Length: 312
Image 1 (cartoon, helix red, strand yellow):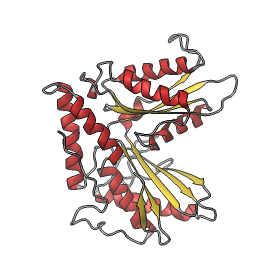
Image 2 (tube, rainbow, N blue to C red):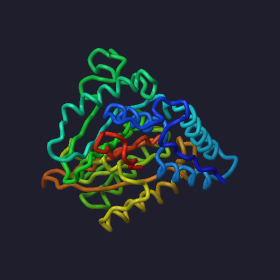
Image 3 (cartoon, rainbow, N blue to C red):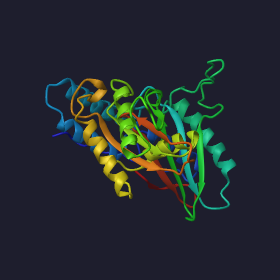
């Protein structure tokens, strides 16, 4: 029986971040540390269940054992789960009269501090020169998305998405003649599985898919990525999409692709699907692939900007 890894929300005994700070900066720094080093509980449960399902003494079981060991070591040492700490994506839900500019400055300060402490690797480089500033800041990085809501609280979600899984993300325009995929859910299913087959052995599987049906090219991709903020054990409120989510995971795990493409029973850990309106002339299906190192966490900030609640 695989032993569940318990996430310590307050960090290690010697960590300077053990006590939750009342400042916005320290709360953000703590969020980055937690996201980078500890897999959220809902993802841990699915990974450990998948480990138990794999046949013993197989390459698939060996790969899952390595994943489990990596999770334990990263948490114990408070070090990144993966050497590619990825694109830093913030999603902030806030009430009216919230100072986005001031918050952005604190986000950037926290990223610089997290990079110096080793919670984030120096991963952001110039697309024109290849130059690495060493602080993970530059045009488009971090990626920050603000949304006003009616609640009085500030909710901050963070996702760290590595380049390997981003490389096997995909977008399709239906109808797709080569795949015989039409503009319906059957066509959507075909392109999802085409993406799964093309990703096998890449993207550090087993993975999780975020899918958006519709929208324009840019919004469709962004909305697909936002599906990865959902809990792995939730279901779409739309029965057709909930059925497709379950069927995609069940079928994918019978393909024999397995962890890292080594074969086995675990190809996908989850699939989350949503839809957006589209133009009559366009029908995009966007697929955002997340690796097993599913790094996303969230916090609710209190009145003094302390961490009042963890969201995952």
